[in-house]
Image 1: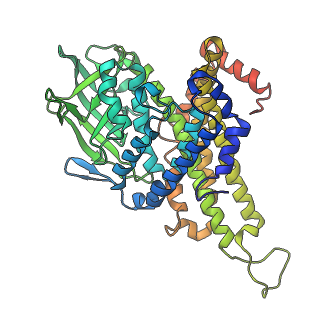
Image 2: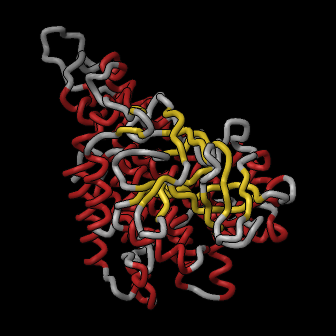
Image 3: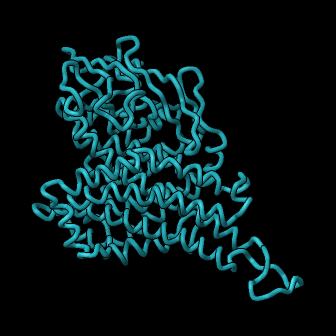
Length: 478
């Protein structure tokens, strides 16, 4: 039975009947789980979403974050959300057991993200950013970085972000000017500015940990000179206390939608005392950051499909109860009016919405399955699934983002004038959905990535694999 914002039945159908998530439990990495346990995870996600995220969705939109003094103030429930997600293991859903994670399949993680984003996209962004930043530290950080940051991030005490964009360098990361100067003390001095940093500062966490791109002094020009750093808002001093790390919040952007999560402007090193800690090797930052960027791109696709789902169920509920006109076959004005859903054009709009949502979610599940198989398989089979995931990532970001807007728009249309008013949630969903073709690389950037890099990489190996698996006409099979 459909919930207020998603269909649990359809989600489980995709997971079990189409993509057979249970087969992953035959591999050692996922052997702690079975189908029943995976369904219990989804049930717990629905309970959290229904009990905490959904009730504050409109509140967070109507009371957006504000910069008060030197800190951004957010909805009071953000701290509770992060704490509960930390306690419940949601921030480490696909992090290995050894680091306190749940080691869940990526497909189940996709299902829970879909649930959370449909219930409250702005709230879900806080958690997704923290998980992505933590995973980047886990995969490429030195042992001391992992021990310092992962426990606090996965517990929900500290927020994680990705800090790429600058005032004069949006998608053109080759032009970033944030600098990192080496010292003899195991850290770099960071100086520069970043803008449009989601959850870049707020009072819902005790600290904010930025995974930040910068150029080491004397580095090569362009993207070959970019390095990756952990830059905390507060660093730990010699006494084990949190102290200012010379990261100043200089502004908060007021947005069309997605208002419950702040987008911050940051200034680092104004007092020449901002410390950054290198992740990986110098000048390899963009390569490492692509892990988080590609995960975030698929996450954007999931958010877009989720908002479209919430909009569909809002429109469906309205059209079942709103009486308007009579059947086309009758001209008798004395007959009672019929629900909107009985009109053929309204049915068409609802079916369009549903087709976009289910198609988009299936596409995202396919990407998640490639990610799962890349984890559990080895050798050539592992490489094949990694290549297919790379190929599909720009599509998994762009299709739900662009089509999601059209889907939500049809939801607004189902309500007529009421859909355009804030008495109903459709207008919020329409505003929220508009960010998806923009952030984590615009649709144009995704097109350039798909055709300019992914199709041609390794002599077109990924594209050839795709054609072999999906058939010469590109027919998608489960």
